[in-house]
Image (cartoon, rainbow, N blue to C red; front, side, top):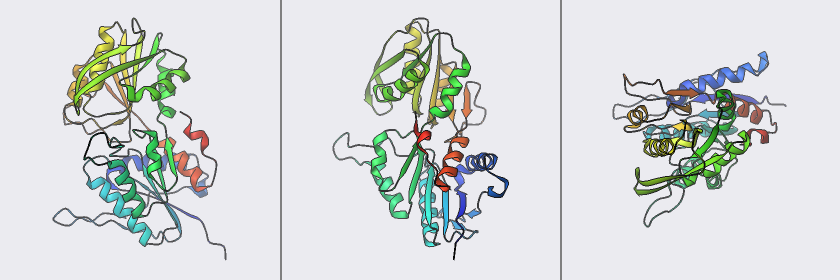
Length: 324
């Protein structure tokens, strides 16, 4: 007897708003009979902080997509793992973890003695929990896809940032990389936009502390956009912007996929020479109350993730989604 292929989309608590936007975008590109609602997932919490997710809806035999970015606190990662485990034990057929921001991605190698490789450990934990697929965006290092033994759909925020940059109509556009690690990403933007590229080279005294920085390339009288995968403390970004401005840049803006924005990031950016900062909604803005957000703009990835979910569910080709 033929069994109906069921689609179920759920969200853990940290990405609920993003998941609702994905549902809206999914329904906008679907026939009326194929539209879905966000599944009902409850996460009751014990008095000591422990929690236990469970599904109100049956997921037996279903293709389940669970949306959750794994930014701090670590409860967000743990909640995703427990939810995946619950789906596996409830006899879901396929379980896709939709992780717009993959936390611990900066720990992608053993860069000093006696340290962990956090990204590999998290990948192993997700696999043991029961995911059959990972959908994520702008990993800190592309090779982290190899940490997983299941398919990884690695999306790029360039899908939303490139149209945005073109719409700014900047006369003397140049794309800049804030460090050598982001040079490949920045180069792909520069090639697509047909503009020059600038590389900022930095040395670090220690984690989150910059020693010195210089800019390589033609900066004079250019409208520069710095491209990066994330903004954490904004120290590198603001230092790069100042170096570019000191070398004669007409204006400096930034596009970064993941707005981690920890510590004094908001204050640094507001006090910097940056005119505008664009981030995606992979992480919700968590600015302290009263923070001036006039420089900050959020660009949604919901439509990108909705398309990939629809294509995966319907067994359609998805290669066009991975072009930088």
